[in-house]
Length: 190
Ligand SMILES: [Zn+2]
Image (cartoon, rainbow, N blue to C red; front, side, top):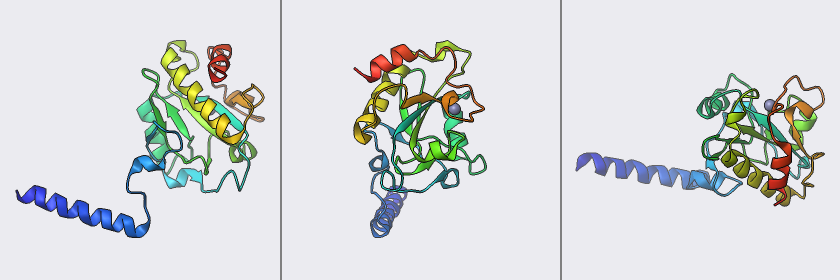
């Protein structure tokens, strides 16, 4: 019928334009971590870079959103918020969204030096509500951190896998007292 024919033509034109522009044909091609869903942050909310050539990547910063998963993604997509992390992990099932390419510098640590050399991972939940820190969330995040450490040669220890609260000058307390670092580091080192 007319409508589907029209959609077919539009889709074809789009694919042609994407090919000319050199844009990846599939959004999934943009993720650095297989299985992550690409949900890009606004380009106003991070710094384009070419890590690890431009800066070494030697720290993973663990955050808790203080927002629902969907709201955290919406904040990263809002050009007025000037904030982003590389990944957001959903509490209920450990689903992972990648919002900023790892080669780019996320604005999550509140410290430029740490931003330049870290990957930021946000976890859905609130620091004073440990029920958000599910087994699924820990397992998915630990596998992601393990992958990041393996790919950049980052030691899998607490000197290199840190909470936002441990960033010098941090005014944030996440991931907070209920984040189980012993469990998390054991999973990362599995
Ligand atoms: Zn944080």
